[in-house]
Length: 559
Ligand SMILES: Cc1cc2nc3c(=O)[nH]c(=O)nc-3n(C[C@H](O)[C@H](O)[C@H](O)COP(=O)(O)OP(=O)(O)OC[C@H]3O[C@@H](n4cnc5c(N)ncnc54)[C@H](O)[C@@H]3O)c2cc1C
Image (cartoon, rainbow, N blue to C red; front, side):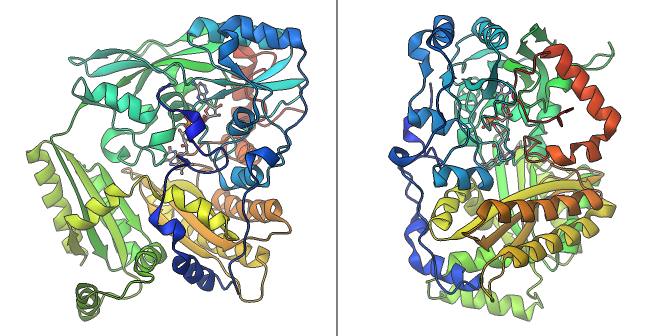
């Protein structure tokens, strides 16, 4: 395995040994507490692994032996770390439960197959014995996609794909490659780089998520404008199901009826286990140019992105923060520092140029050969200039790139101090963006105010656009709030429900790239319609008639 799981946090983000400079900066956390109206920071440490409570085992010895016979005893685990690591994903809701250390459900066994044939045998054995199976990639789902839910089965196991991590083919001429699905992001890119290629799929969770997980949650990487979303790059898959293997062929295009690969994208382990995938790749871009701009308002930044994508500019990424995100990121990095002369001059210059508190930062990324990068950059400069934006240069882009995977490490120190932080995302067409933005922001602010303790406490609600299309864009909200320690799950649920209701009522999708999991199931029928849900149920009934795979995810129960 390319990643030693024992070196990862089972109840938080990333490497246990990772030391984040900000994590130890008490002045930063005290400043944040005052912004949130908290009288003081609260000590809310996580329970250590030795103290956690796990559900009792229900499988018999012969049943355990059955799994061991398929993959080998050394590839079946049941220690506390493994069970806790695989019990839930990495959403705020998951972290609350992991940190509390009282796990209502956890997989009884974690099995590590090495080949499609072993996956098929495991699924057949589990189905025959009434045991639920949760396919597990990196476990970074933020919608409850890997919750160890046994459903109506006697027990649940996690089927961990991380031993299936080989790049099996790369066709440079056709620009396509094939890999086993359990491969982590860095290992996949390393193997492709060795052949002069890249997939270019970099979700913020890149270091700890897998090819199979990206496909299953129908995700998008940070450079999706240039490299596409999963549905743009996935060509074919091998899906192991309790009924056998569904193999879809990687044609460049085909009119032989509906594309069955599409049925697998976003199937969240409920239809089968993706064991192998074939996808489009690109030559490694010789030039990467990331730079910052400051727009006068969110609206002018949104319009600039719309124009850029509608004019087909070859951009890799356009990421626009709203005024609150711009202000908070700036303030966050300035806490405890004496403003340098350069910063003071910059502030004075912005004031003189009439940039107000409504100013919004945008990072633009261009990748490719020197000519196409220069052309796209020049054209975007013109659009930005036309909107009265200020170019901030490459320094902003470089800093964003250097820190682009570090943000999630800040969740754990916040949670240690009584502060909650959660995210959600959606997408709609350009016409609907302003109303959706306003409605979700308002729902978040109101529900946070209603659920936070303390007379003066309040939330911080921030948003950015990071994926854009000719017809619309995504909206990604981050919200920070004082935790209601007497009812934390209730608080999470109230805020999530208010925001999701606002999304649905204002023409947004339940998710632009995080998926459905358990968390969005209650709203699925509103998005897909009753007939749409019947279609999904029919597919599930064909591929997994006994409901072995990932109970409770993706499809509302028919009961
Ligand atoms: C800090 C953070 C940042 C994130 N940023 C992004 C982002 O920028 N873009 C984005 O798209 N997502 C993002 N996510 C969400 C998450 O990382 C993605 O959904 C990712 O694709 C999950 O991959 P994984 O390997 O961790 O899958 P897992 O979490 O292990 O599984 C996800 C789902 O897929 C199923 N599954 C996993 N592997 C297989 C398989 N081989 N066959 C069948 N089913 C399988 C699981 O059962 C589950 O339902 C982020 C998450 C976090 C915590």
